[in-house]
Length: 57
Image (cartoon, rainbow, N blue to C red; front, side, top):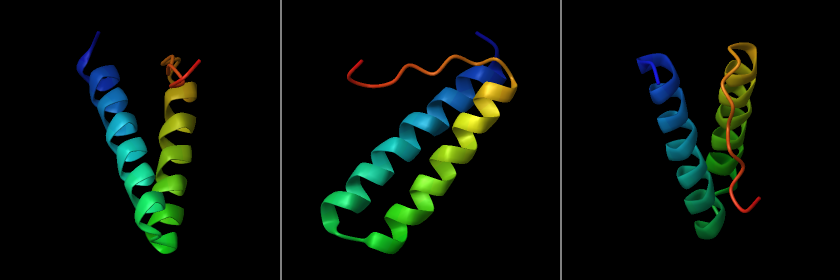
């Protein structure tokens, strides 16, 4: 795995964790920000052919 892929997957995991935490604490604004960031990261992954495993699937 190259550095780009590893870094991207790390950012996705971190953002997902931050999104979950924001939702759990009721921080709607932060949840929206994290959701948008997560969508951008998934788009970037798709554009570069990086497969992202979906938790729970």
